Length: 218
Length: 211
Image (cartoon, rainbow over all chains, first blue to last red; front, side, top):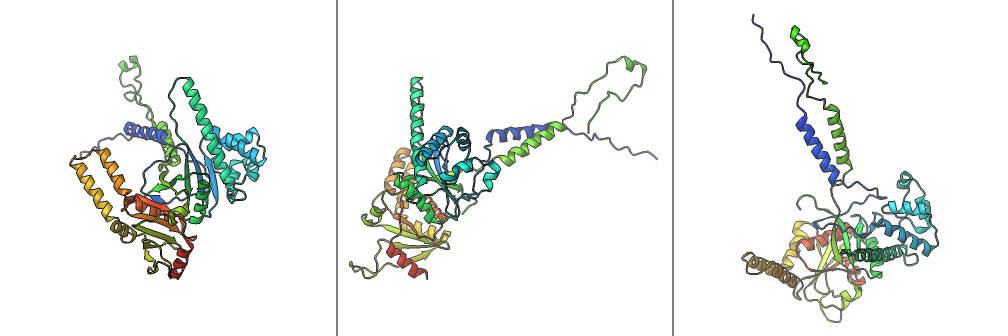
């Protein structure tokens, strides 16, 4: 009987295209990635059809589901300056280490009295703490002060940058600071209105309301 | 997996011994692939795709001026309340037994669905929308430039006859509804709208209607 010879196939296959693709994807994700930042609360923003991107230079007030306010300002140097100003106003001294810690944070929602304690916590501990929110009633309008000082410091920084650029004979592209409100969709409108009132009391009338892109067709 | 190529499977003849050993050009790529996919997984998981979007909105400097002093002809007021409820009335607000002798305002219920709010807005905003369509057709026929189109559209949106929308919310309404409504206005190209405080008389009427 003649033997049926099976063609011997090589079990190792050419992986080059797969590797190419894998590295292509790796490169793509590395370049486009903006890492997730840890926020003290999870915010489920409402969706809208707006496709305008949020400006970079922004003071952001977050309102969570329960109506508590959180404050965030983007720029590292401005953050430190703002904290110094707030410390002077409310007679709280911050060490350099605490200032640096503050600059690295994102949003926070604690009153200035407990901010020192909050800053000295480990990051993992911090996420477990329930933030009481920044007070914004008319007696302790800390949020208003944060906004005001942040705004002043941002303007100061822009001015020094402009002077520096002009002394070097370069053109300076000035981007004014914007104000953004990021509120949870389920938050009571009244609490958002309170935050808006804090802004309008400081003569700020233009906001960016942060939303997610609408999913599907509606 | 690891393939060690020893040339021709060992020496068969005497002449083989003289030849230098053929080293394989293939290298084992498995660890590299492992690493590549590990990195890929890491970046996929840590990257955030949806950048936050924002919609810009202007708030009136003083809310009282908006509702009291401004007499708008073609206005519609939306009042939002609990459980995604939304009511509206046309024109000015007349409380019962008002001195103008006008019939008291009643609130009409609508909803956020396509047949509710969207249809209502399109209907009320029709004259302006039609004017905008005419302008766009002119632009398509290249009768006007794109900057002119933009200017004329804005003029049309801001004209006195165009619909003015007032957005009000009581203390039980949620933020999402306000955003939904503003978004709907943006979709319908409504240019004149403002978020203002709800009046006590309106609240009374709302509570009476909502029962």
